[in-house]
Amino acid sequence: MRVKESVHNLLRWKFRGRADPAAPDADFSRRQEARRLSEERFAAAFKTSLDAVQINRLEDDCYVDINEGFTAITGFGRAEVIGKTSAEVDIWGDGETRARIIDALKQERSLMNMEVRFRGRTGELRTGTVCAMVMNLQGTPHVLTVIRDIDVLKKTEEALAVSEARFRELFNNMSNGVAVFKALEDGDDFVVVDFNRAAERIEGVYRDEVVGRSVSAVFTAAEERGLSDVFRRVWRTGEPEHHPVAIFRHGRLRTWKENYIYRLPSGEIIDVYEDITKRRQAEEKLLAYQEQLKDLTSELCLTEERERRSIATDLHDQIGQTLSVIKMKLFEVRERCLDPDLGGPLAEAMELLKQAIREARSLTFELSPPMLYELGLEAALEWLGEVFQEQHGINCVVTVDREPKPLDEDLRIVLFRSVRELLANVLKHARTRSVDLSVYRREDRVVVVVVDRGVGFDPNEINDRTIRHRGFGLFNIRERLGRLGGRLSLESGPGRGTRVTLSAPLKTEW
Image 1: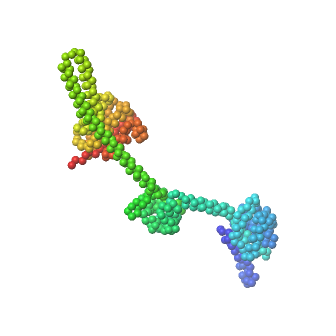
Image 2: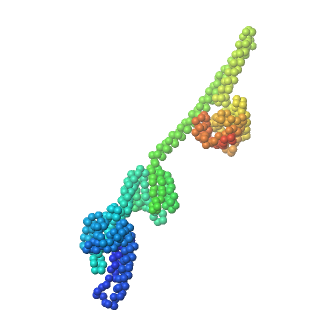
C-alpha cells in the first residue's frame, strides 16, 4: 500500500463516523455505530501498517502513540518514545525537518511524500518519505505522521541508474552491431526497440530512422535471407541460434554478417552481429590461392614425372644402346685377340659392362617404367609387385581382373606412384611379410586396393605425424588423386593391419 493511500485510509476511517451536532437525534445511534466501526478500522490499519506511524500532540510535539512498524523501522520501542518529544528521541537529527513538517501542515493541513532523512535507534541516518495530517483527538490537535523507509529503494534506484549508464555506454561502444526487437502480432513481425552505434555504422542508417519501425519495413533482406525466420524460432523456443547471412543488393553481394540471436526474459529478441565481409573476402582469396598452389603442386609433380620419363628414355635409347654396342665390340675383340695375356682383362671389362647395362636398365625402370606407358597400369603394377618381392623379400600377390580400364596418362602416373609409396610405407612401418595388391574395374572407375596384415595404426594420428615423416604420405596421395577426381579411403587399427583403397574415374570412351 502506498504512503498516500495509507494516510488517506487512516484519516478516512478515523473521521468517517464523527458526530454532526446539527444532525437529528434519531440518527444518533447510527452515527455512534459508524464512529465505532471507523475507530476499529483505524486501529487495525494503524497497527498492521508496515510503514512507521506516529501520533504526536501538535502543541508540545510529544509522542502519544506509535505502531509496530515504527519500532521495526526505527528500532525505538513504545517505552522509549511515549511522552517524549521528537527532539528528545532525536528521530529527525535536527529541528529543521520537524519545523518543515509543521510549516507545511499549517499551510495545507496535510503533507504528502516529502523526502526526509531520519535517524534510527542505532544513530544511522536513513532516507524516507513522510506523509502527515492534523487530526483532532478528544478535541486536541494531533499530528498523524507516516514514515516510509525508502533507503533500500533509493540505493537500488541509484544502482540501477549506474547500471543503466554502464549498459548504455557498453551498448553504444561495442564493436559489434546490436539490435533489440519486440515481437508484433504473435511473432509475425518485429519492431526495432533499440539500435547501437556499431549497428548504425554497419547498416548505414541512424537509430532514430529505425527505432519504432518494423523489421519487414526497414530490413527487407532479413526476410529474404531467412533471418526473420530465425527471430521467430528464437522468440518461440527461447533457444539461441547462430546465423551467417549474405546480404545482396541490386544483384550484387553487399555484405556478410555473422549473427547471434537470443531471447531476453522480457521476450525481446537481441541480434548481436558483425560485418565479416572483409574477413570472408580474405578467406576466399586465401582459398583461391591455396587452390592455385594445389594446382601448381599437381602440375609440378606431373612435370617431374614427364622429366623422369624423358631421362629414362634417353638413358634407355642412348646410354643403354651405346653400352650394348660397346659390349658387342668387346666381344669381337675378345674373339680376335690372340694374346693370352689380354684374355683376363677383357673378361673383367665384359663383366663390368654387363653390370653397367643392368644398372642402367634398373635405373630406367626406377625413373619411369616403360610398360606404364606401353602396356598400361596393370602391367606396371604387376612388375612393381615382382620387383618389391625380389628386393625386400616380402611376398606381394597382385590380382587384376583384366577388364578394360582406359585411363588418362596423368591418372596412370599418379596411381602408379601412389601404389609405390604405399608399398614403401608397408616396408617401413607395417612389420609384415606379405601384402596383397588388387586392381579391378567398378562401373566407370578403376579401383586399386593395397592390404597388409601388419601392426596397423590409429588413423586419427595420421594428419600430423604422417604428413611430416612419411614422404608423399597418405595426405599427399589423397591431395594428388583429388585434383584428378580420385579418392582415397583408409581402414586400419592397432594390430589389425591396414587397407588403403584408391579409386579414380576412367576415361570416357566416345
